[in-house]
Each structure stands twice: as C-alpha cells, then as structure tokens.
Length: 296
Image (tube, rainbow, N blue to C red; front, side, top):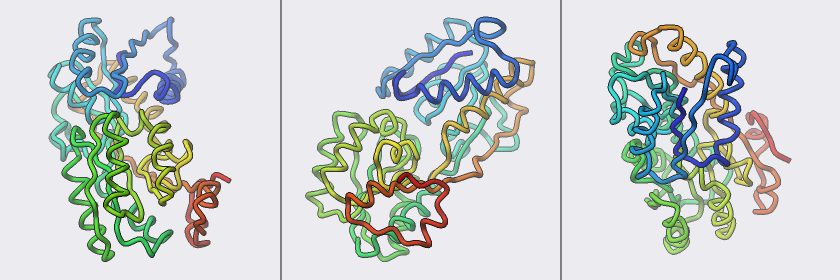
C-alpha cells in the first residue's frame, strides 16, 4: 500500500498512525500481510509527480492520498491503479471522479465539501468578532479548489456585509509576505482555507499569525492544536482511519469504480480559549455551547 503525502513525515505522523490503526482493526498487520510505502513531498507541489511515479514503480496495489494536490498527481500518473482519497475536497467539482455514487474510474474514498463549509467558518468568525469588517482570506493558487474557495469566501462575506481581501501564498516562502500584505491591507480578521501546504507549515503559520494580533479562523483543527483561535471543519485523522475500509475492500478485489464515494458529514468546531484570552477576545457563551472541543 502506497501513501503519497503532500506534507512531511513529521507533520503527517498522526495521519499515518490513524490509517495504520484503521488497517490493523481490519486485520492488516504491517510486515505480516501488508507492506507500506510512504513518500513525502514536504509541502513542495513540484515533487508530487515524481513521487507518484516512484510508488507505481514499486508496484504498490493501491495509493492513498489526502490532499487535492496529491490526488491530482496520482490521477495524472495512473488511470488503472486504484487511488483512495482520505477526505479530499469536492472530488466531483475538481474533476477527480464522475459522481459520488458511481466514481467510474480508478478513484474512490472520502470527500468533503470544503468550499461550502468555508461560508460557515466565516459566519463563526463574525460571531466572535462582529466589529471586524475587513476579512483577509489566505489562498493557495496551486490548490484545485482555489477558485471555489475564493468565490465562496466572497459570497459569504458579502452576505454579512463584510469586505473580503484576497491574499495568496502558494509556497512556504510566500507566507511571510502574505501576512505583511494582510497588515498593509488593514485586515481586521483572517480566514485560512483548507490546504495541504498550510497544514504542513502550521507551526510557522501560527507564529506569523500571532504577530498580527488578529482573530484567525482555520478550516482544519490541527491549526488550533498548534495554537490557532478556532477551526470548523472535518477531522482529518478520522478520515484517514476510515479510508482503511476502502483500501481493505480494494485489496480483497473490489473495483474503485464500483465503490461509492462517502462525504464527510461530521464537522467539528474547535475553540482555543487560551489563544482567545491572549488576544483579549471573549467567546460568546452560545458559541462555546456549540463547540465540539475547547482547548483551555
């Protein structure tokens, strides 16, 4: 079983563990009846194509991917080898599969309507800082959902009477300049979209965001564990654990084209009270009651 990771070994360790645990629960034991080949792009989108070819060369039976960028690289590399998605955003919209019920090709697994969830995330941020009118939206142009994220953010902000500011960072080297741009544009709050590179660089990103002293909302919970203020999105580790069910069925002879794609239905609201206190923000009680998890 191959795993094409957009991130690094360190930033993806808990996802690898979640997947291996899911496999173990289904009777697949590493070194006994299954072997794993893990390859990491370390957040560099240009390395993915070569890594996908490397996995195919190692004659893996199935490739697991967890980001839109990894999924596209795997799709470009093979039209026959099964590919399992561990929660890639909007699989139909970005052209990975024909439909959820009948994927039709060599790709199946989990998807999440990340572009739709973004609107809710902006609404939650607005509840926490109703006075913030200028909202910076951090986007990665190499993400297949880039256009959908920006369109979704614009309409969500417009509905609330807010101004959306487009800020692009597509490589780790561009993060510093992106944060400087937010400050220059007088942003009053920030939204970080769901992206593999931001996930990989979450420690550095958190340090940069802290310098702005602004409330920041994230699509992924891992950013909040790293010290961010709040997140609303699906639990990635749970999707990796559940992806094992697809890999199990494929290893037992099932065809990806005939395995319907599941949509992530559980979205968690995570709030970091320690960060809120440091920023001098009081979280409304109504929101705390809705939170699935609160970091003290």
